Image (cartoon, rainbow, N blue to C red; front, side):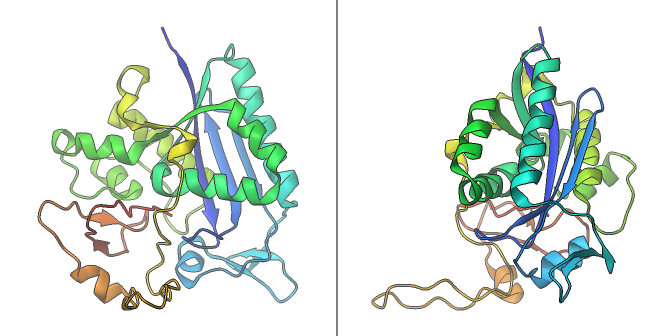
Length: 268
């Protein structure tokens, strides 16, 4: 008997850091209903995020994608609309336990969503917390199936290429990536009976550190020696035995790195 109602999601954001704003939400349910919204932001895009998404902010504070002005709503309105979509999916499923599925959710989508909601409106955060049962990370599932499926790289588009899953190239978009996640999940063989090891609660939602290649180091206490800036070159040199190469983005153009004791596969 089916226990969960799965909704495949993706976010585009101003960067890979705690204070980043989600600027696009995309979702698709198991029955094919979709959701997509663009959100206002006052945050400037990190260069890496701008390159991946094609998004930017113009001098008037408008959200652009590839130079074209997007129709946006306020952040509160956007998340309220998202909540209503999820609530409708939950009710139409017979109120089965609602699970949000994304690629890299444990270390990016889930903590980013939590941070955005808690900054925005505590009541709204509590309503999401009550509605959502778990998050499912297709990246974690793919890691456990990599030998069986011959996956040499674990970015979403890299997996799609290996498994012959078609998708539209170019800049990332939240809805198109959510739809691709759904296709990839099907090819990976994800279903109710085999996802227990890749389900996560909200209390597992936190950034272990800001993951932004080229960003300045965080402030440290004076008595602690300052660490060198995290550059792309220094990331490449951090290797340890038995570490798993991890991709920083969903596309096939980014570098890989190996980090001790932490997963930095934040795929946006």
